[in-house]
Length: 402
Figure 1 (spheres, one colour):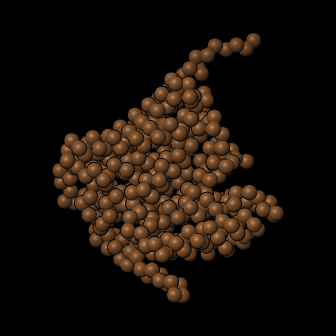
Figure 2 (tube, helix red, strand yellow; figure 1 turned 45 degrees about the vertical axis):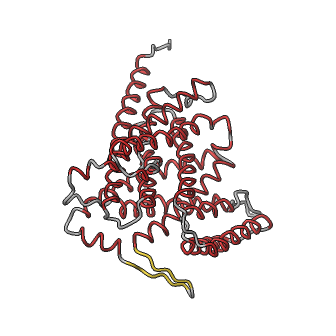
Figure 3 (cartoon, helix red, strand yellow; figure 1 turned 45 degrees about the horizontal axis):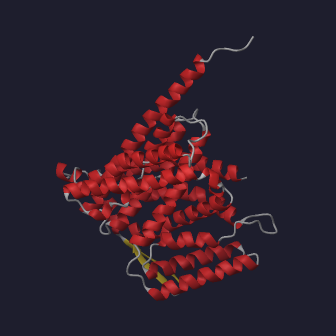
């Protein structure tokens, strides 16, 4: 059953990569068309949500970042919990290589970024941006060019991305949670504890989880915390075991929410955050330290960190190369890990808060788009070459039949 969940995840994520790509391209087209002013005005426009005495007023950009992306992180949290308890992360013997590769893929990009910013006088605060991998885009590229390659490479990429998400969430908690209002936070903790106890002692109806998550989300916005943190915390209390009716609340939530996240939430986030107006963009800004640091962190740092850590784990005997895969194929996957896009843009918003068309936000977008596109293109080329070599070797094998 764990394998079926993993394959369903891969299928949905790979297919949604095309939708994500279209949304990003559409954002770039609109941001450089006569509709540019309307696009940016819409993102900055404020809208009110009121349910009884509960009232929030946020811009469209903030609703997407704090509202819709909270659902994304809820699904991420559910998937992480499932993989730890029932899936790939439940077997320690399968973890060493992808976990070490994920750690290497977080350390090396940060070092590359800091080296560039230190040498060129750029802002040091952008080092977390190139640490993340966009699993939807990476799997979409993999699905196109690596259909004949071992499935163990897909599992390696998925497991690495799960650990990568855990690292990104930890960074968000540590770096971007200042200025917290303690009273709403106390209510959040109390609600999570109460819901956790209720889920242990009896069957909790589905509407309870929906209302509970909505209330925790509202209190999180009031507290000043990133909604990504409490979304993952809420996912941790959703039961994974089957109820008396044979259904698992966690699996139900994953099944129901994942298509909406893959085909609506993430594409809408991409449309809102990927729009960069090139009018008036100077060469100096296009090659600014922040742009170059993020781009090289994704393209150079990710491949060096992921592939280097995987090779070291194998050399030391504490991990193994994915079953049936060659080092060239693993290198191609390491390149795909440099496709940061969605999560990198999200961290960029947190690292450099301000207007969506501010100079720093433009530079973040340019760096993320440049590094991600370069990683995707070179990774696809390497994997296509590896697939071609595998096909040639298969054709050259002697016929042993009578």
